[in-house]
Image 1 (tube, rainbow, N blue to C red):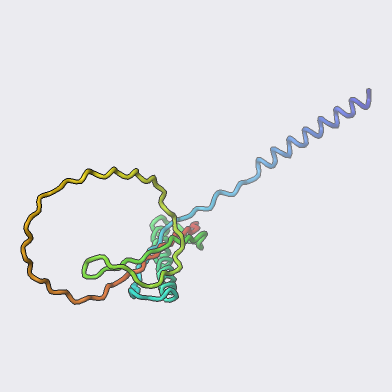
Image 2 (image 1 turned 180 degrees about the vertical axis):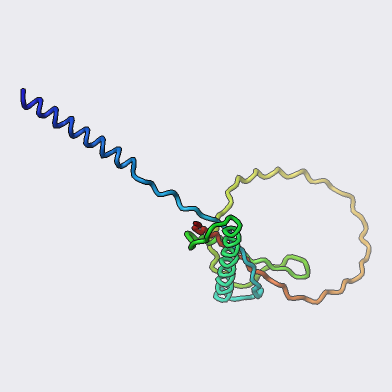
Length: 173
């Protein structure tokens, strides 16, 4: 009988101690989450239309560096306007890039090597089903009039721009 009472007291004391330990752990101070500012840096850098892949990658890296500077400037501005101190970068995400060329206001194709673009976030969507073709209608033949010969325009060099995006998250205090 004494051993049953002693065992019950021991188990009760053990449960009481474990309960107090659980309360003590719950009452410890918790660290608030780090406050951050998230920005996106964007940069556009000129690139020759017929650049090699190595040279295009160098231009892309130059554009990424400029995009990081753009993001830092935006983050510093936001930190100043919210009366906080800007800390170090917590994360940097390459957003990818693209090359756009134009010649006298018209689209032109980039014909050089592709730089090592990162794979930024890709939009996900559903493709609509293709519409069925309309029946063909025969038209009456018309006489063609003789046209004047057009003079070919001189070829102009296309101007190309490489765009890069970088997402940055900075700690603030």
